[in-house]
Image 1: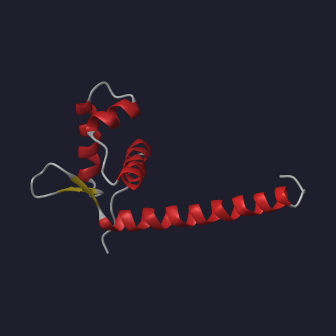
Image 2 (image 1 turned 45 degrees about the vertical axis):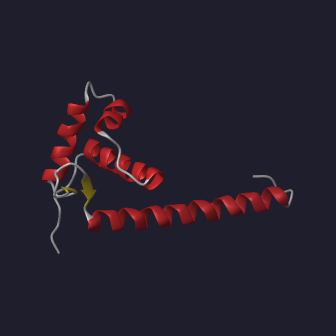
Length: 106
């Protein structure tokens, strides 16, 4: 298995943002959205960050060169991480609700 080079903290935030956006919208965010949400001066700045992430192997382009796909290995790891966090949060939420409904407070 090939190990991908590490991302910078900022690149990781952008990639995590893209994954969350994809999970919520069933599509990746346009460069203009990334630029707006990360305070870039232009969509071209967002493209530069995406190019850096792509060069490290975390993103790939389709045959048309327009859309970007997230590397499968990274996507599976992120989905698994999201699942574990979501399960933990839901369990904690259910325990808190149970305490409140039993009159014990949070």
